Amino acid sequence: NLTEIIEFVLLGFADMPHIQWLLFGLFLIIYIIILMSNGTIFLITKMDSALQSPMYFFLANFSFSEICYVSSTLPRTLINIGTQRRRISLVACATQMSFFLLFGGIECLLLAVMAYDRYVAICNPLHYPLVMNHRVCIQLVTGSWTIGIPLTIGHTYQIFSLPFCGSKLINHFFCDIPPILKLACGDTFVNEMLVYIVAVLFVMVPFLLILGSYSKIISVILKLPSATSQAKAFSTCSSHLMVVVLFFGSGIIAYLRPNTRHSEGIDKMLSLFYTILTPMFNPMIYSLRNKDVIMALRKLLFVFPIISKLK
Image (cartoon, rainbow, N blue to C red; front, side, top):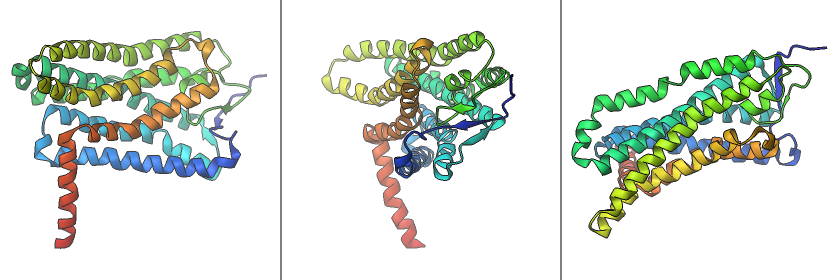
């Protein structure tokens, strides 16, 4: 007998009952760090006149997308751990999945746009102001934020149109695609193929474009006459490259490895990495390896005490 499921149960970390409050405190601290660090980068790129360039315009959008991306999963995880009420309606689950996929796709596209920006800046510096003008920057960012909306909604709708029966336990801490498909009763071959297609379009294609951009960038940098020029050029790219490796590496392993190799424990650990840990490290990578960002942070920390004293 098939029973229509109208809600699921997110097991999350229920198999670790003795450390629930430790996990709650850890995830809460990480969430606060992500909000504050990405929010600070977004703020300084808007306030500081030295950071009014295309590179920092894209960085501001990336920081804002990081906040949205993490907020699509982590608050619900905190509520589930704190209240021990793990039920989630089918509509809420579908909504969470659609936002998670949308903001994840936006991040992939923004990272590709940022790589293109560095490519133009280093490989065609004389044409940089013309190529990366304000209108082009707005178009690239708008495209990154909107291009995935219809595909994300359609993909989510197709997954949740499947018949669900029997178990309603999701062995994950949010509504991700692989654990949801495991609960479906019908043939999921088409859905699994669509997962690979979407992953190729929004993960592999941007990743290959980034690799292509950086292969050109590195070849140009190595031809620079002085070691000082090479070091300066590398420093402007290394932060972005580290973020790309962290984010895309875990995402590719999670979504593009063969389905037979899917392990629920490994899926959960990989998801923790690219949904929580990478967004926490990204602002640190950008701020600690970027002199302009460090200077802007110092100005901000210097201005705030003065304003408070004047008040």
